[in-house]
Amino acid sequence: MSTTFDYLDRLEAEAIHILREVAGQFERPALLFSGGKDSIVLTRLAEKAFRPGRFPFPLVHVDTGHNFPEVLQYRDELAAQLGEKLIVRKVEDTIKRQSLREPGGKYPSRNPLQTYTLLEVIEEFEFDACIGGARRDEEKARAKERIFSVRDEFGQWDPKRQRPELWNIYNGRIQKGENVRVFPISNWTELDVWRYIQRESIPLPDIYFGHERTCVVLPSGQLLGLSEHLQLDDEDEIVTRQVRFRTVGDSTCTAAVESDARTVEDIIQDLLLAKVSERGATRLDDNISEAGMEDRKRNGYF
Image 1 (cartoon, rainbow, N blue to C red):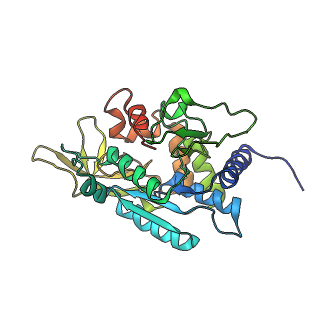
Image 2 (image 1 turned 90 degrees about the vertical axis):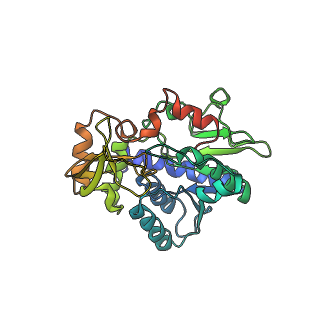
Image 3 (image 1 turned 45 degrees about the horizontal axis):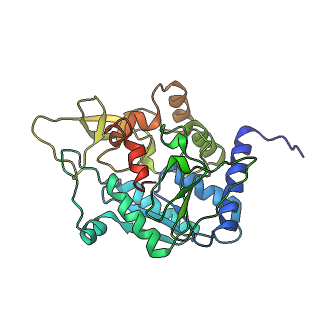
């Protein structure tokens, strides 16, 4: 039998090792699961790490209330298929409970408010580690993260408190009240994720593939899927285009890209020709300021 590993085997082995380190070092971990491609890949990796046993953590979703319906349906179906516990907490409930201010403007994103709900659910269940699908190639602030990223008792991230991670040794020691954000696919790229999805024949929400959708044309030229949450006026240009989504966050800040890609193979070809990063092409909330993501992470954002 061949013992030769290709690069996907190596990425998979590293991620499985990290997931098992989480299970071994923490008492109450959780896997943050949105129904997006990265968290779906994490569930496949968790299956390989822990089956035939149960996952040593629940799936947790912070629902903004502005999520794509196709993704929420997929989230529920996959959790049921896996037979794993799914915990859903809603940003809308946090807004009422903490008297938070609803976002305004034409494209009112609740993404910044997810932090409050995430910190609430961490406190509610006393999670000491939260596993997520963030990758270093997504955004420059995420490139600063270690795989085990320590957060203080307020959920805040300090890039100066990074711990060395030598020879795949991860230090999960924390003080009471602190928690760790864990990124098992931190070293993967968007293309790696899609090639792994192809290799493993992982089903995804239809929204990732080319489909016809009614969109609003933004001043930047980006296409935002039409939804009830947008505050439009008569001057907005509404068009119907063949699009797909590279990422599936809050529908009010996640733009589509024009594409006829109907299969995973088609999407991989799209990516080989793409000149803009996944978040750079689609995420409006990253353009708030030059350090928008880093500022949110310092306040507890994942």
